[in-house]
Length: 247
Image (tube, rainbow, N blue to C red; front, top):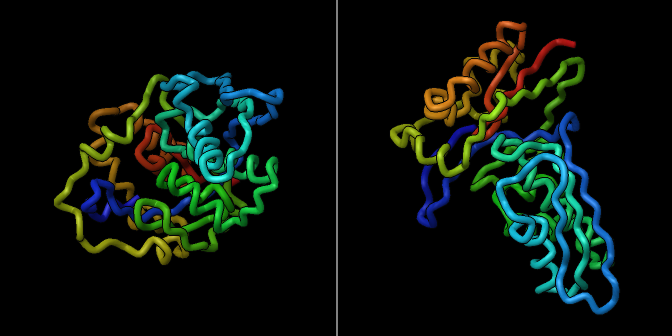
């Protein structure tokens, strides 16, 4: 995860690799409401979130399509299995899935490119979850270039220290801005190298500031290496850590 600079609009340009995994997931159900319903209904279940149902990004996805196409109010039920504040893209995947489900439910005829364009309006990494294919991402995470990333024969493990949450605001505030503009390894080339080389090539810029403030996250990464991980890193802005192991 390279943060390469701050933009005039206040966002940051990044270089990163997105990869979809199925070891953690949310459950999303969307149902029609009785005729004449004036407003959508949002229900949150499962893991606790830090927002009220009325502020959920899934409702923002519904409003985006409602404003454009006039779709009817619906009931959205979300059962969370992906923790928030973990850098795992749970909310972004929920938003993209909501757009896709509403597109099919109301026969809007939007193709993947059109869905990606609308998903990007909801969040920087939402567009990735429309196709769920490994991608090299630049810009604010919305410019996607498909890449070949095969972890066949390997096992990916994700862990989150109990009680740890890292807000995106906190992570970006702690960045070492002196590194902006410095030359970095090309991530597209780095992931083609033997995985044993990744430890010295592929670095998450957020770790330098997040680890001192959240030592449990740093400890989890080191624990994965002690248990034989070929590569380990914090995910995005944290607090989750992933390790890649031999099966």
